[in-house]
Image 1 (tube, one colour):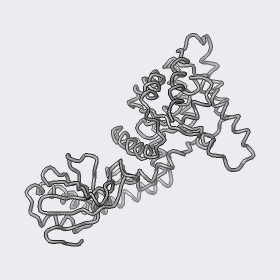
Image 2: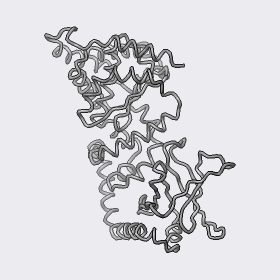
Image 3: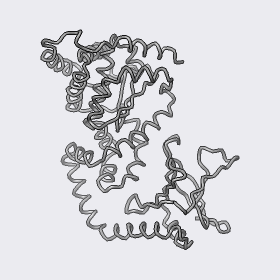
Image 4: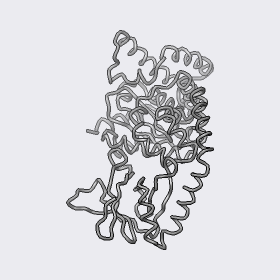
Length: 389
């Protein structure tokens, strides 16, 4: 800590979805009635400060042993500041600010309570770690099930904000409108599970689609280009929607980030777990699901299509395209980027066979005319997408 007249400066971490990595190191200035900092997104020449007055400020304990102080203020809801310097709390207490008294009392009680139960927590965590080692998959599911849907949606929002920074997401209004009309019948079915899906198209030559926590789904434009029918595209989306509804993405997130993330969730340290999300994003985009997850997503995806009155045959025909691509690159050790769907959605031959068997039962007595006619809106979507640079 360094001092300049009545102002003290502390090193801190600022969290904001608009930042490149979702967070950045800042210098937090502390004076008699407020905290302030220069946002990393603002040039030093303009030096526009964010000022968090003590009146209305919220202090929370978090991190390992509640050593980190998290600051937020309703005037700047997008910003969340984390300070780990123990001298920061002492400096706040020394101010004798009436506006801070209640906040400091609550924060100090949390820390004292944490010290009292430290030994118990260590024992419990040791048991959890051992249990995770012995039964990783069941333990991951238990951890995922402890999370409220609202947290998962916040996690998805933060992760998607980081991904959007790549600049590939199509923001064209006409494309968005056409996409929404095209996927509406399928969206209705996922909403019944409690999720409100948000689907985006990304300009990319990779034959891929992926889901993020909370119902965020990204569909690469190459899928639309390769598809011969609207049912093929909706079959891909139904599969991704099933990953969402069964929380496969969240469980994959816990497994990817590791035990620290899972334990943070279990003990309610959501602030600490949010801090780890940015590092996990590249792994989630290229996440390989287990065979069980993929089979489950196929089965539930077909059910979504049935209930939406969309011909599920499209899912199978698109997977057959994937199967043909696999045959072409069977002798190649490194799958090129344009075929990334192959590495993230494995076991295509087995899955196609299982789906064919399932469809024989579904299609008994069912006619093509019984399903929704989607060709017109599908062509409108592709036409709108072609107009985007």
